[in-house]
Structure formats: structure tokens, C-alpha cells
Length: 312
Image 1 (tube, helix red, strand yellow):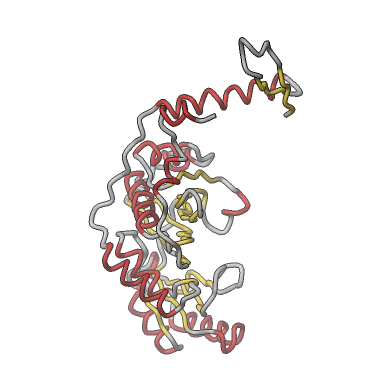
Image 2 (cartoon, helix red, strand yellow):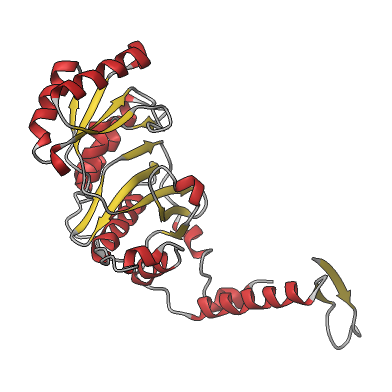
């Protein structure tokens, strides 16, 4: 885009700067964006959604404890991740942390009866781990003691002394897989993301995002903006998923990220949506010391009419 300066008589008007576009399509697109932004600015700022029964004190204690022990921040271990999500009512599946082979087998025996088709998932863990699936650290559909022992021994051989243990979980029933997450921006604060989940999340790149705190309208448009939205509302005879449960996940993530700027990254993937609810089967959370968010910067998102008039 170029800029043309149009000079008018000094007594009548100051110099005016007009945008110039190379073709009519670009000009029409820019005008449409300007129209949409004007409509958005004219709306009354919506209030944040409610997320009841969040234990802010428990989360504060956990976050402060982790950052005291790790001043440079880092990824939470599986137990701390589960505790933090539980404090805000986020539906993480039942998980048992086991440090050796016998403990893994015992946990699998206990959880097997809870799993879909009586099976469990086994996830190797070591500090600093991020992408478990890409590293071959996840095995699902294990149906007996022999399978569990064999997989844990495989983990031991593959990952060596860095292996700290494994997380054992009951297999979840199939459903629509989504990812829900948060990234903290240093200027504008937390950004909540919703998208297609599972191992194909990066390939599909089907995502929508809004700045926290989310509003009721955000909860609706984040879903409808997805290309895969028909899978959630019922497609080809499949039943619709529990959209109220999905909205609750997003509202609680928004509240958690807005309450704690130290939560610089969170990734719940996949969150399995079914007609009877939502269940997160894997999550990772990264903490880092951050100053409290400056509320003045939040005004930059939606300046008031008076502020807009004063802007040169």
C-alpha cells in the first residue's frame, strides 16, 4: 500500500493523507475491515464469563511453590499439572504417577476397569519433556499386565536414565478431539486458543483465538469460527457434542490465565468431546515469573469513543 499526500489551501484544510491501493479488491477488503472494526468499537464491552468454584488460593500456592523452587520457570510435572487444572475445575482424566515397573503395573490393574474396553494408556515422563507423541513416549490401548510391563521396559531401554517414571491413565471413549490452550502476550495479556486436536493439530491448523477474559459471545464464536465446527454440532448422523462442557473448559482456562500472568503457556490436547461431556486426556503447563498485567494496556484493545476522538 502506498500513501498519497493531498495538499489543500492552508487556510481551509490541513494536509490530508489518503491510502492508495494497487487494485480494487485490496481497497474493498481494507474498507470491509474498517467497517468491521468500527462496528466492534461501537459495541458495549461485554463482561467476562463466569467460572464458578475455582480455587484461586490453591493455584496461587502451587504456582508460587514451583517458581520458588525453579526461579527460571519451566514446565510443571504431571502431578502439579493435574493439581493446577483441578483447582480450576478443568476436566483432566484420572491419572496415576508411577516411578517404577511394579508401580506402573499396579496402577494399570487399578485403572483398567475404568478405561474404555478395560484398557489403559501409558505415558513416559522426564523433566523438561514437551512433545510426548513425537518422541514415542505414549502407548495406548494396553490391555493386560504383560502389555504394560513390555511397554514400560521398552520405555526404559529407549529413554535410559532420563526416564523418571510414567503416567498411567484409563483409556477414554472416542469422541471429537480438540485442543484448548493459552499463550501469554507481554503486551495484551492471555490469548485463549481453540482448535482441532490430536496428533494432526498442527497439520490441520484449524484454530480460533480470543483475548482473555472471554465473553459469552467469544465462547460461541470461537466454536463457530472453526472449519471443523460441523463435527461438534452433529454431522452425517453423528450426535452433537456437549457444547456446554466445551464452553466451561474455555471459560475456566480464560479465568486461570487471567488470574495468573505467570502461566505463560498451557496446552490441553486432546480434549475429547462427546454428547455426555468433555475430558482432557493430556495437558502441559509452563510457568515463568511475570509482572502483573498493566490494566492500562487492556484499554488499547478497545479504546473508548472519547479516546478515539483524541487520537491524532
